[in-house]
Every structure is written in structure tokens, then in C-alpha cells.
Image 1 (cartoon, rainbow, N blue to C red):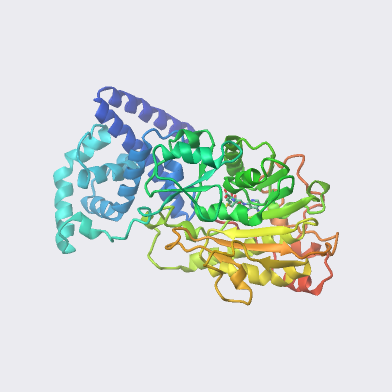
Image 2 (tube, protein in one colour):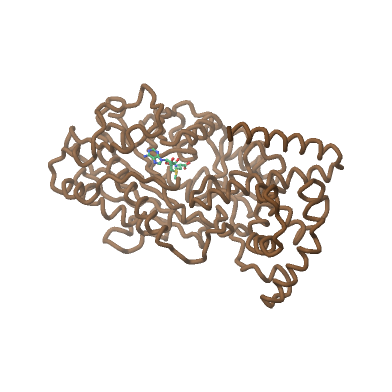
Length: 511
Ligand code: SAM
């Protein structure tokens, strides 16, 4: 019933929107639609933030194909978010919104930005006209708030921070499956100052502010907009052409297709992803990259059976699991969200971090159990020790029991792991301020002449057995679901100790 009503409302408002827009000039019409596109994105961002779930970043929502005026919409969303606390205060004090307008509050916020701080032009549309009629009431509320807070203007009411996006260079990874680096430099060099990165051979550096979202080379998958730290992860794994490689937590697939490109499209990349919607994004990324050696597995990495013959030749595993994303918060513009409080970690956050770390440890432990694996990269875009050094340190005895040791990815890179255990200098960190993104990379390499200690090791987690549903026939799951702790058949004492410490946790949070 509710659904039918919603649809009726939605189609009524679309019809109203069409007839409203028919009466407008071109400039009015484009401003009218930009505000509505911005309001739609704002709604998704605010809903996600209220549930402390990053549905998608503001940028990825704005750069979806359905959004027409990307630049204008992005600016409007960011500016509205920046002034949202003031906008809400003014609306609350003015108390002029009926239920009808409250249901469209995100649109009201966007229009309020234009009325209070924007150019006040092209304000055609019913919601716009409604707020313009209230302009003098709104203005007197603003005056009252300013005098109460001893501020000269609305700008003064906002906490100012540097815009972290301003000085960030634009990194471009050349998809060598489609274009060589030399040609990419030549093409991009027609419009931008292009330099080669000093660490990742297929990475190019463009000046801050270079906007390539609509560039034809991005549209056809010849180049990917991928940050430096993110591009270092697949290179650290160093997969060779012809290898079988498993990307354990793969969507949206930037690192998956980077692996395929490093392997010259030769060999096999198995891309595992739990979340159904993200599987679709992964498939889109793969299609765009032109890679033909990637196989997508929709399901839980923890349920992958390492004994399955189809996984018996996996030589390298990239594990880039769900994490807090704290290292890329600035790039995602999290500082604009209502939940953001400078420098504060709440109890909720701590609980979330601990749950994430529990999953990260289980996933890394599982990676060690693949019989032919020689190299494992564990990476996060988190700055938290609990998701980084602590995860690695807690698994060192288990890694050792499988014959793995830490290796040093990118030895020339200065910033290493926090010195919380001997050997943390092997780990790699990037700094969210200095390097503009906070990433963490650990590389485990199997020592020469180590044989897989037990062919019976298995790892199951009942809670995640059927999550994601729709597991394909090729899914290498052999055994019935059982609690993880019951199925650790390994006799080595380190593994037994490890098992006692970490039992199954059902919670997943951010991706
Ligand atoms: N490596 C990806 C890239 O560079 O594009 C980003 C990976 S993202 C940080 C983590 C991904 O792991 C999410 O898409 C999430 O849905 C997925 N994921 C979380 N738990 C998983 C599990 N148990 N098995 C497989 N995938 C999982």
C-alpha cells in the first residue's frame, strides 16, 4: 500500500516538475535541475551518515552517469553540507516548514544555501518560490542568530578548515591492457602537465585540480583515476604473467584490474566479492578495463575452501578488506558530514573498529591456508593501528607456522609501520596529510622450501555461509557450514592458540 502511494507521489511530483520546468528559461531550468540532483545526492549522503554507513562517497555519487551537471551538482552538495548546521538552525528558528516541505528537506536545504549564501538567481520552482516568499522572515532569523553569536556574517558561524582537496595532485593509472604509458603521456600532455610517478611505473601525476572525470580516456578505460597509495598495493603483490591470483575482497575492482594489467592479461585473476550490488560495480570495472582473465566469485571469502581444486594453484592473494576508511576520509569529504567531530573517537567508533579488526584478522588467517600461496598483501585505507599493525602482529605466529615472513614492499619508501613490534619496519604506511591519503600495506612472502604443513586445514564461518546468496555453481565450497573454531584441524600449537583468541564475529560494517 505504502509503496503504491510513494509511487503515486513520486510520479505526481515528476509531472509537476515537468510542467514547472516547461515555463522556465534555459538558465532557470538548468539551475532547477541542478538543485534537484544535488538534493537527491544530499539525501543519500545524509541517510548513510545518520546510520554511520558510507553508502558511497559524495564524489562517486556525483560522478554517476545519471548526473548531468556534475561540476555544478558537486559544488552545490559540498557548499550545502558546509553550511548545513546554519541552514538547519535558521529553518528551525523560523519554523515555517509544513509537512509537505519537511518531506523534501534536502531540496529545501539546497535552496536555502542559494538564498542565504548563493547568487539568489534562477530561483524558479515551487519550493524556491515558497522560500523566496519567506525571505524576510528568514533574514530576520539570520540577523538574530548573528547577533546572539556575535558574528558579522554567516561565514563566521562556520568552523573553517583547509579544503583537503585543494592541493592533492591527480594520479592517473594507465591501463596497460589498453594503452601504453608513453601514448597516455602524449595524449594527456596535450592539456595537462604530466609527470611519471617515481614508484609505480604505470602511474602518472597531474596538477591538483585536473578534472578528468569526463575525459575520453577515462570513459573508455584506457586510464583509471586511482590514487598513488591505492596503486602501490597490486604492485607490492607483484603477480607474474601466467600466475593464478586471488583478490579476496575485490569490489569496486580498481586493484583487481590493476592486477590483470600487471599480469599482461595472462594467467587467472579470481575476484571474490560478498556484496551483490558491489559485484555489479566490479563487473563494470572489469568490462571497462578490457581484461579477459578475471573470474568473478560472488560470495564470502571466508567460505572459500582452500582445498578446492580450482584454488589449488593460487600463488598470490590480495586482501584489501572492509576497513574504517579513516585514511581517505579527507578525500571522501567526510569532514563535511554532520557526524564529523574533529579529533573525536566515540565508543561507537571503537566498537566498529574492533569488529572490523576481528574480520580483518579472520580474513588474513584464512589467506595463509591456501596451499600454493607464496605472496599475500594485506592492505587497508585506515590510519588506525588496530586495523593495521595490530592485525599483522597478532597473526605473525600463524604466518610463521605456514612458513611466511614479512617482506618490505617498496623499500625506498620512507614511511614505515608504527614501531609497535620488532619487524614493523617491513610495513608500509602513507600519511593522510603528507601523502594526502592514509594507506597501510603488509607483504607476507613464503620462505623458500616451505611445504604446506597440512592439507586438511579449513576455515568456515556459519554466520556468513549464505550471505550474498546467489553463489555461482563454480563456487569452491565443499563442506557444510560449521563454526570456524570447530574446523581448525591444524595440530600446530600456534594455530591452536590463535584459534582460541579469535572466534567468529558476525558483524561487517563499512566497505
Ligand atoms: N580492493 C577494492 C578496490 O581497490 O577497488 C576495494 C575493496 S573494499 C575496501 C572491501 C570490499 O570487500 C567491499 O566491496 C566489501 O563488500 C567486500 N567484502 C567485505 N567482506 C567480504 C567477505 N567476507 N568476502 C568477500 N568480500 C567482502
